[in-house]
Length: 115
Length: 113
Image (cartoon, rainbow over all chains, first blue to last red; front, side, top):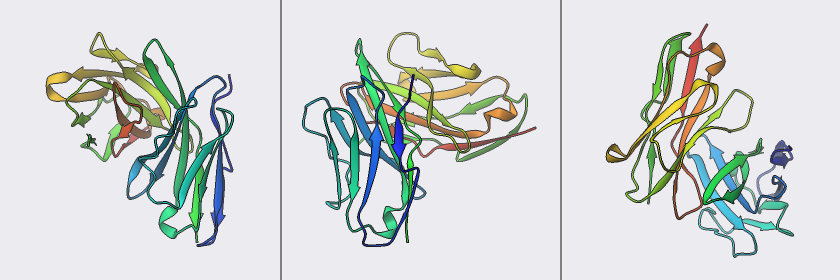
């Protein structure tokens, strides 16, 4: 079946602009995660959505970052007033908990470059 | 906070050589353990995972990993690598009662033909 998809695959923006990154999870997966992969910091957790519960935002690096998940499916990660240090690959993952076992499946990522 | 360490940042080996990548984590409670692989130009893919039971788990493409609880380790192994195993390998840990994955820094493996 279809995997996690993300768009755009690449985004170049100017410092100070806002960007929106989109994630389409695997159909039926109730949990959705955003991670960031950067040269200096490796792979870092950003935010987690599970069903209708309040999201876990503990990994968001600043209040310029926000995310929403509409209708329990598609998610959008928004970065306001982008900075050069925001340049990274933003990864989305989705999962389904089955018999207490949860495995996260990752999308191809959005490569963000802030000039 | 939990942390995950992958001791080797880069590994270079020849085809048919054996591979072992180390992974240690710091959390003392019950954990779920994963190895992901990222081939050049591709996205993260799950190699194998451990939740409970037999501490020796087998994954795709001939990889296996052994969970040693006393050593807080989950090392990845492959007896005979191929050129196509050139990739970056990430160990990840999740608290059994938690959600987010904590990743190690990754190990870049280059297999020379």
